[in-house]
Image (cartoon, rainbow, N blue to C red; front, side, top):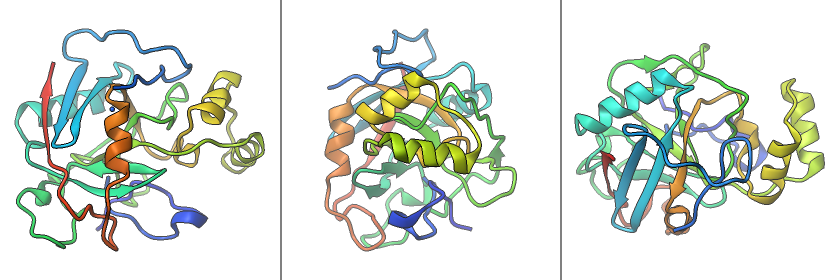
Amino acid sequence: MKYLSIMIFAMFSIWSCNSGGGEAGTATGGKTAKKGKKGNMVLISTNMGDIKVKLYDETPKHKENFLKIVNDGTLDGTLFHRVIQNFMIQGGDPDSKDAKPGQRLGMGSLGYRVDAEFNTKFIHKKGALAAARDNNPAKASSSCQFYVVQGKVSSDAELSALEARKGFKYTDEQKEIYKTIGGTPFLDQDYTVFGEVVEGMDVLDKISQVPTDGANRPTEDVKMNVKVL
């Protein structure tokens, strides 16, 4: 079963596969994220530059799983196999290691899921690190596939309509983030956000702009190696 990195609406009405030198703000505000304690920071190195991410303590199952697959080398040599500008970059499919040009990717897993850990503090702002998933009713996450949000800015009207449809309210600070920094608010409370970019937002933007094929796979591989800092 293909992994979803979105619950796609009008602009992306397809079933999707699983899923920077600037600094991202915190999950609930525009302030720069504080330096994390040892084991909370992970470096994603690509042929287009490095992205440093901070993992959230408030999503312990995702943090533990991500550190496990980083430390055991699962993500090394995998690709950002699905890239959509103004939306997100997605990677972590173990089948993407040494994948042939044009090979369809996004269905790989490690044979288990991670329980959903939704937290209203953590939104899909630009730079959010989140877990892809398939269409399971519990909204449990992929064991290995993840995405980093690029997104775009939203208007007050768009956010109000989304609140009405999904039945929750953003804080004023969260609304300001979406109106200025941008993101993908339609994913909130449907996919687990478990970290954020703290360095390398420019690399996120660079990867988001690469040419892709009809399946949104970059025409030239964007390969990653990942380590805990």
